Image (cartoon, rainbow, N blue to C red; front, side, top):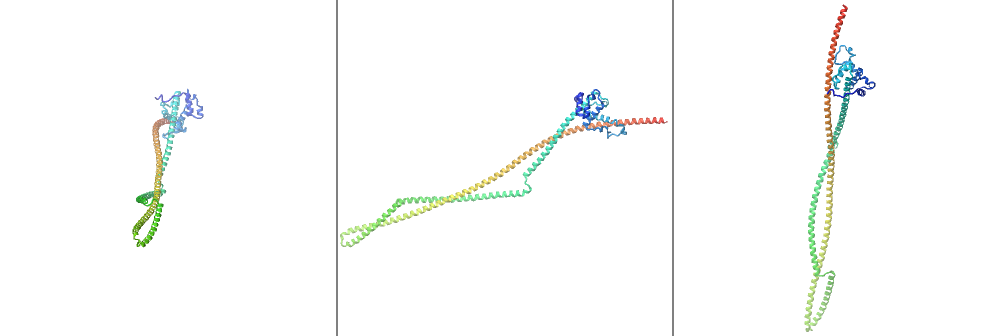
Length: 464
């Protein structure tokens, strides 16, 4: 797996990649194939390695010429020429295993070989490509995280605004609470008063209607009775008319005839009386005429009886006329009463119709008010439902973004753990390196001490 961990590039491809990715400016333009193959130049390789470490770790050029802080050196000026090389070796020793190169040696810098250097450079180029790809994906994730965080903030702000709007919609402002309470109390009082007035008016109208219905029923009974009496009087009148005369003209003619007859009878009576007186004077002298006188007396008696009968008939006719006139007057009165009752009935019906119209209008107004209140409530409920839907969608999006953020956090945690492992590996490598340097310094110090002792001995011998 180590041999197949990254693709191998030829020299031309390595030069192109180094010019594009690692070296810039005049250094990249001046780079040629002869610098890497067949005999790589150590100076060019040092520059390429330093630039790669600068790209990956951000190590500046002056850091290669600085002593490590965690190491104590008795004579640091002795290592000034050796510091760039040692720092480069230590950094490459920790960097190339990351690039899947595990056989790096110091001789690869001092005396580089073409195949090994091409393999090292291929691993470095592959790692730089991998790093850039990972960096791009990480930047994309970071940008998505930032955008999702911004969206999260916007959604939280929108959520808070929606909650505030919901609270504003649900709650009444402090300034308007008293007015709202007063209006609600007034509305309740008005509803109660309207209901009470409507109930009282309906009761009064029902009582009035029942009373009027009873009065109307009584009056209709009386009217029916009067109609029956009128019918009976009409029948009596018809009977009387049939008894007396069919028409008033005939009655008048009959009366005139009767008057003429009475006058004639009076005249005849007068004549008879005169004749009777004459006959009375001549009765004594005319006994033979007694029979005629008796006959005349009988006739006179019959005439007086007829006269009495005529007087009784006239009285009866006058009584009947008076009865007819009184019946006609009563009939006219009944007709006027009937017309007045009809007018009263029409007026009361009109009043009842107006009252019923007012009641229906009040019912319609109350129903319309209820409809408007219900419509307003439905509108408020619809708005509240829409806001609730928006809030639910926002909450769902928030949950989604939270889940994505959690995933990003998990990914960052994983990356962090990886980087921590890398850091620990680097730290252990640095510690090993520092331990090696310390051992080397100690050995060098021991050698220096030995040499100084030998020099002192020689100097002492020379002096003696």
